[in-house]
Amino acid sequence: QIPAYFTALFIITRLLIKISSKPFDVHHKDIKSLDIAAKLSVDPSAVEAASRDFGHIVKAIPQAVLHPSTPQDIAALIKLSYYNSVPFGIAAKGHGHSIRGQAMANNGVVIDMKSMKKHPNGTGIRVSTEGLHADVGGEQLWIDVLNKTLEHGLAPVSWTDYLYLTVGGTLSNAGISGQTFRHGPQISNVLELDVITGKADFMTCSPKKNSELFYAVLGGLGQFGIITRARIPLQPAPKRVKWVRVLYNDFSAFTRDQELLISRNGRKDKSALDYVEGSLLMDQGSPDNWRSSFFPHSDHPKIISLITKHRIIYSLELVKHYDDQTKNTADKEMKQILQGLSYMPGFMFHKDVGYEEFLNRVRSGELKLESQGLWEVPHPWLNLFIPKSRISDFNNGVFRGIVLERNITTGPVLVYPMNKQKWDDRMSAVIPDEEIFYTVGFLHSSGFDDWEAFEDQNKDIMKFCKEAGVMVKQYLPHYSTKDEWVHHFGSKWKIFQQRKHQFDPRMLLSPGQRIFNNN
Ligand code: FAD
Image (cartoon, rainbow, N blue to C red; front, side, top):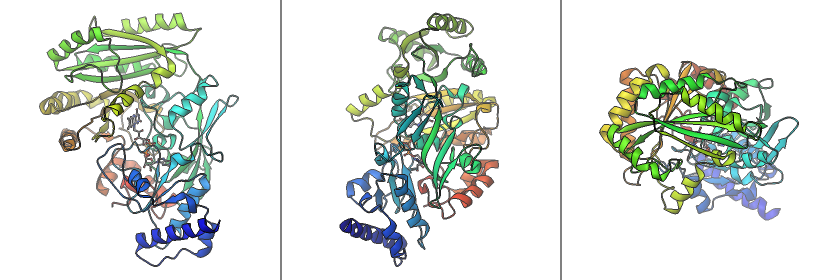
């Protein structure tokens, strides 16, 4: 106990003096009550890891890293900052798969959430087969949620394409994929949360209890509190999926079909698909990419010659779940659905895979890139939400304009529509004001010396949208000025700001988002 106490005193004194350049003014009794001594680290390798993220574009160096074992450790850290005359920034870092330093805390403290993952006092992943829900720690990865719930024959309904992301991280954004048109984003599929606010208060919130905090936190970019538990609804998991891709050279036929498919979105609608996405195929050597290898090798030449001819081909991706009882009907239903679509004859490709293999489809690409040293590279991504009414202008101006002119696009470009009605406007997440909107994701990888060329392309795209009056919203947003944030939130800015004053009045949390603390 005694050495731990002195270590704590040393690190915390150092932390506060460095941050505030003022005399240390946390009371002795506060430190005594802190049981985070051995859990605060100033080890150079821990600090270095907390200064980086998946983007490899920005770097922000914290003073220390907290490795909590319990939510109480997190609350103790927040309290320390909250009651100090000059508070320090605190960022929860989930899996650090942000692109622009959103989980960093320059000069502050980064909380390494994954330290709580396997701790016996943590929430872990607890499945209630009676309640049809799982209580999941904010630090848990979605892949672990999937594996655990499948043990009970159950699974959540709304996913991200890639599962090595934390529950707290995706709920702070939205969590979108091909299921979103039907079930809403992951933030629409939460029953209850435990949150530690920026005042170090422990609060349980739901649509009925402390609802202001509940809606603030969902899509709240980590601004209002740290999620330590989320209750996620579950459904019986399907066994397998029918997985189809069809190709188009005509953008309007592609989007018409996508919109038709997402209009069948009732939770009990038998004709509804379980997943609808889309992407661009461009001259990148292969129609496959790290996000998924799908097309049979023997068909690559014919797809490549189609791409050479048209320069951009649009690939629509569909999935229907099935299990032993629905095996035969799933086939028939898929055939019927395909008959109603206008893809290019001869360009339909299908697979039949296990449910888990489908959901975890991006992992093999990650491991391959990792083995080639191509995973930990800069990722100058741009993710946008675009109103349906302007998606054709976006195709002409951006896909067939900027992207073809610059001819530098490497990596997947996703395009698929979603229904606004599946999003709850009370949440902090921001989407366009139209019933149907598209997500477009430019998921670039680059070298360490050429990522700026992609940034220039991203800027051109944003400029095009501004000049053409296309009212886009960024997903996983990043801005450098307050005016841009105010514009991003639009009519939600006032409430976002009010909630910040209510739940994190000293502006401690997630400073790397650079919304309230522009440093
Ligand atoms: P981090 O990067 O660690 O944190 C993100 C933000 O959330 C930070 O501000 C952080 O402070 C805050 N935060 C983290 N944990 C908590 C918590 N417990 N409580 C409160 N705040 C917290 N997104 C999609 O929607 N769909 C996709 O298909 C998708 N695919 C992706 C694929 C890859 C390869 C990558 C790199 C990203 C992808 N994303 C996708 C984006 C991803 O959802 C976000 O970047 C998400 O924030 C990553 O989760 P994380 O655990 O790494 O969060």
